[in-house]
Length: 229
Image (cartoon, rainbow, N blue to C red):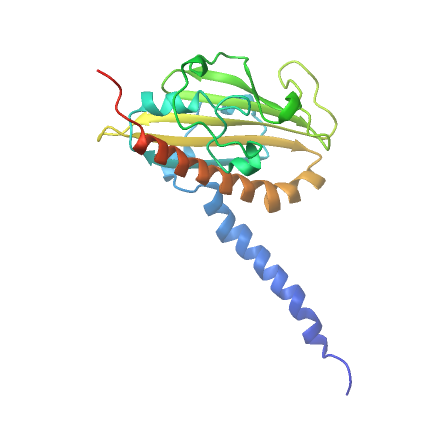
């Protein structure tokens, strides 16, 4: 008999379903909680309340070889028009290397300040929560598909949009280092369109960029000269 057997036609579909199940049940939870303990994942953080009806969240963490005040000095100079993001600069900083030193004029962030996320000011993060040495929460609202920012606190969101927070939470470790926990919470509409993008693109991209930022922060802190006494 010619042609494929009926079962053979189902093999690609079965393989796709198996791969999707593996991603959703095993790989995805690990991407969203990379490096974090169960307690760190379960607890609430400042800034969570800004997105009470989140449709997605992640909690990733690492331990850095410097006290919180040193880590803080690197974090507060983030921004596309400032020190960069310490991640893959070719993807999020126009190919310009992120800062490799502490710049005094970038050390005074304020609540409400905009940190450029795209050239020309089309998109930005807003400093939403600021507890020096402990917590820095950035908020971003983006209209879709334009990718232009809107003020989530004072403007009605576009019909299609993403709104979320990116929070950095620092705690000292007994050996003089810093436990850095990064919490994201976001919501997007319409979910029929944004859910597949979040799962297949947004979450993996965040994992790649966030783990690179952890690596580069660790490198800078390890190479930084001691503060003058």
